Amino acid sequence: MADPSVYLLRSAACLALFYASYWLVLRRETFFALNRAFLLAGAGLSLVLPLVRVPSPFFKTVISAAALHASTVEAAQAGPSFGRADLPDILLLVYAAGAGLLLLLFAARLVRLALLAGRCGCVRHQGLRVVLCGHAGESFSFFRYVFLNRSKIPPEDMDRVLAHELAHVRQYHSVDVVFSELLTVLQWFNPFVWPYKRSLRETHEYLADRAVIAQGGGLARYQLLIVEQHVGGELLELASSFRTSQIKRRIVMLSKQQTKGLARWKPLLILPLAVVLVLAFAESRTIVKSDPAQAAQEAKGGTQQLSDEEMAKALKDKMLKLEQMKQQNADAIAKLKAKLEEATDAAVKEKIQAELKKQKVMALEIGAKEGMLQMKKLEFAISKETDATVKAKLAKEFEAVKAKTEECSKKAEDLRKADAGAEKNAADKKIEK
Image (cartoon, rainbow, N blue to C red; front, side):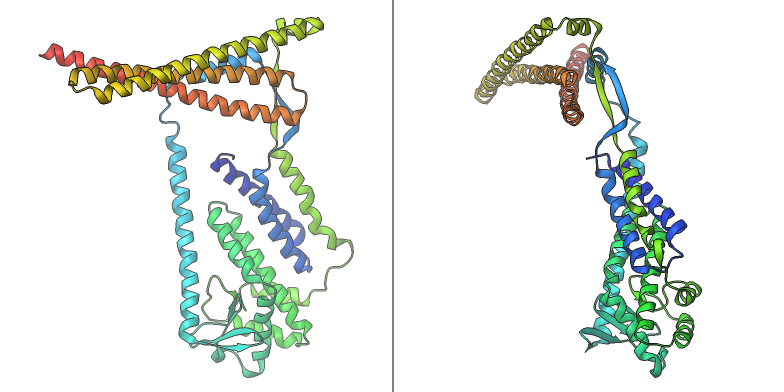
């Protein structure tokens, strides 16, 4: 999987591009269901596309086999690096703190809604749980719960308000709300995620308003009701509310004629945008270039087949020798551990432990050498492979073996330094005595 910080930045860039497209092309159109689908699909794709890995058809990186081998050896012999990871670690802590805080607020709002439903009680109506609230709030819905405040709604308008909230419930707007809240937790640092969430809420309101008018409600009276409900009242953040979006835009959208013709195909803009993002995140193809001597050998034709066989045989022989060394090392470690358990004298135990440490260092060095041989085999396979997909797979395997080899080399170096430090301390104590 990609580095988490890289994934988050790429995901934020995807969301920004999708929202910019919506704001420039779609937000004034009245196909609200398609706009909702575009926003939801854009949010989902922003989470998935950064994980898609394909070889780039445009970019490639050419390196020589000798340079690849030299860089691998240099990285394996390099000591641990401190300081460079300090800033990413601090940024990661800041991100985790922000995400954790928003997640706690999200949970607190869920608890608040549950307490409100429990305190007010509810009645069944058209398959819904209608909660008659006594607080100075306004009407809203959350999943199959509809919260109504009769004191703020004229009796003659109760049916319209209930129809509005019923539209939210039947169209599963609360699922979108929860999804957008979790997306905000994940991308709280992204300045585009907040207007993205607001635009999705506005689309919900347009859909609910259109549903009420479609049932035969008078347009002028309903617009007046929106104005009346807009004044005062406390809004629960997770709710699909009767006044969530800006009142002016809701009234304008109610009066606007529905978009027709070719404009209805505008949401399909998401398809070329997704393709562009996949290509933007595509990995550069790695091409390992043969050495001049090897290229000359390839030009000879029949000699190349013999060279391949010789190289394969040499690698196989070295791997067999390493296997023998590994077995001898494992036997030596087992014998030393047995002697250590039987020994009673402190001096003898110290001597055995010192020898055991040397054998452990040797085991790590053998592991590093084995990794180097595996890397050689992969280099050879990459240089011979022509299929881009297979070559990319071999390159990933090469990186995994390289990381394991570096880890073995680092552990061996750390153990050697620890032994050298212990010997120096012992020598200093003898001098002091």
